[in-house]
Structure formats: C-alpha cells, structure tokens
Length: 505
Image (cartoon, rainbow, N blue to C red; front, side):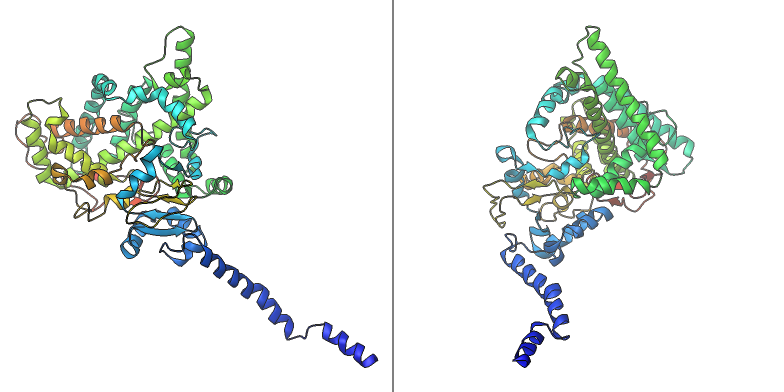
C-alpha cells in the first residue's frame, strides 16, 4: 500500500527532463501556434508584402524615421503590384484609380487618427483635424481668401514681394562672384513674406533680413516631426519628449519658434483690437477665424500652421523649379522666348510652357511625398483591379509613388515640362501635389499663383542668365548651372532637403 502511494506521489511531480520541455511548449510552441492562427485568419492575408509588416508596425515606423519610406514602398510595388501590406493594418496603393473612391467619393474615407500628431499646442488645425465637421467650420471661414478672384485682386500686393525676391536673387548673385547661392533660403523668405502679407495683412520680413531666415529652424523642426507620423499619439508624447532632449540645435529651434509665435500672436491681437474698435476683420485669415468664434489661442495655432505650410511648400517647389532651369539651358531658353513674345503678360493661360514648368516642378518637388492615410468605411473599399479592403483598414496613396509611375509619366525622374503640353487623363489624375478630395489643401490656388508669378518674374528678369542680360530683348546667353547633381530629401510627410540648401551658381 505504501509503495503504491509513494509511486503515485512520485508520478505527481514532473521529471527533471519534463520541466524544460514544458517551458519550451509554453514559451515557443504556444506563441507560434497563436501566430500561425492569427496569420491564417488575418483579413489582409491576401495582400502581399514583407512578412515583418504582417507582424509589427515597427518596420514602417523605422522606414519613416529614416526618411526612406517612399523609395522603399515604390520598390515593393515594383515587386508585388499595386497593393502592398506595410503594417498589420496598413496597406499602400499605387493605382491612381483608387484616388476617387478613397478620398473623394461621398466625402472620402475618414482620416487616420495619426493626423492628430500634427496638432499645434493642443489644437487641431485645418490640416490636422480628423473630425470633418470641425475642419469644415474653420475652412468655411477662410476659404473666400483662396478664391481665384480674391487672389487676382491681391496680386499687386503679392507681386511687389515677388519682384523684391527676384531682385534679391540678382543682388546675391552679383556679390557672390561665381560662388554658389542657396535659393532654398531665398524662396523661403519670399514664401513667408508673400503668405503673411496677403493672409495676415503684415509681412514677416524675411526678404532683406540676414540669412538664414529666422523662421528656418522652426520650419525644419516642424517638418522633422514627420519622422514619427505613424506613431500612436499616446506613444508619441513620450517619444517627442525624449527626442527633444537629444535634438541638435535645440536652442536655435526654441529661439526661432519664439520669433514665429510672437509674430502669430501679434497679428491675431491686432485683429482682436480692430474688432473692438469697430473695424470688421474680414480681409485677413486670423480675422475671419476670430469672427467665426474661434478662440485667440486656437487662432494663433491656425496661423502657425499656415506659416509652416506656406513657407515650406512654396519654397521647396520654387527651389526645384529654379534648380532645374539653372541646369537645363534649353528649357530656360524656351520659357524665356515664350515669355518675351507673349502679348498678354498678365494672362497665365497665354504661357503654356511656363505653366508646364510649374506643373512639372510640383510633380518633382515632393514637398509632401508620403501617403495620405485613410480608414476604410463599413462598406469596404472596392476598386476594380485591386483587392478588396475590409472596413477598418488604414490605406493610402502617396505623391512620390504616383508622380514616379513610369506607366503614367515616362522617364519619371527627368524634368520634362513638355509632357504637360499634351497631358493624358491619367497624368491629371495622378498629379496630387496638394492632396485630393474634399480635404485637399485649401491654399492650392494661392500656391500655384505665387509659383507662376515668381517663375515669370525670374525668367523675364533673366537673373539666371550668365551675364544678367535683363534689357537685351533676347533669350540671354545661357544659365549658370547648379552645384548638386540631385536634390536628396528625407521622405517625411513634409520633405526635408538633406543638405539643408539647394544651390545654383
């Protein structure tokens, strides 16, 4: 009897060999089975892509932080086709046919909550707002300022800034004596001055100030925030805190941000004082927001957002335009010939080649190269030729991939304005420098106008000509050339030039 009890007791305890086997089952086998089960039941299992993207978003976050997201996704599309899995619940598309159903049909799919990472001082801006009603109330207040008629009426004021910038380029070139000139800094000065003067009623004062522009560290730091675009908000707060402690140039960023915030607060307070004095503030961006019931603090945040977006986007595109004309004398000569023989100098429609140069610069500038993520609605996303995506999937298309599609834009990396003189419907569809749909950039008309006017003034004055033959009535004797062989960017939501400058001779 005792022997039986002892034997039973001994069998109740595992052998020394059994213990590690049990641990292995718990630690390795069970998770492996659960993982295989998850992969088997995964609603996106039919979408091709790297295995790691099915398991964790860390892969995508790393690509974004390194600034190589766009080129990596383009390579994946070349390998896997128009739909690629890039995270457990993220899909990237490369077929422009998906633009309308995703961004425009019935108002488009909802914005991904990660847009809130671009809120400023706790306020959702017109750009970052995820709630369409919240955005619409603010956009309605200011959209009259971006109507074509209002922009044309405001041209004399803005043209004075454009002419000053072109004169400044000529002056910088004269004193450089053949040394490189940074046009990115110059066009940031132009952009911030023209945007602030037209929208806020007061120039920031970039032109004529000592280089670099005082707002540059603020603009660069804001763009660098795109490193963490896809990081969830709860995690971003911690990442942002620690990243700030190791940020290079933290002192200059803080000083620049203080200057820009002081300017934003000043123009807002001026409008508040004007209203109190009985002067309706309907001609300025901040005035219209205040009249719509937006608080002073939020209005300052909205102004800061416009300062960043206007400065960054216009300057990047204008710099790419100038850089390409400086390295391609045949295209510069053709544009100058068209301009000097134009009977209606103020009518952009009579300058088809110049307009094509602006369009091609917008295609290649990559001011906003990455995806515009949306959340698929309850009905799913159904696009002919593409796999069906279930509700709740985060999906997007990006300018980099669409603008470099060789099937739509042959020789996509070449600066070829001529392509726009006989453009196809697919080219027009795939060109999304300002986004697409109901929530595309509200300032697109203003940006295109400033680019057109600046390109026209630049070419007419012939400041890129070797001998500055402004008054010779000819096409000049060629352009001076460029320093860089190419313009390398960090592929964040707002691109950043790696070199920090774009130089021409």
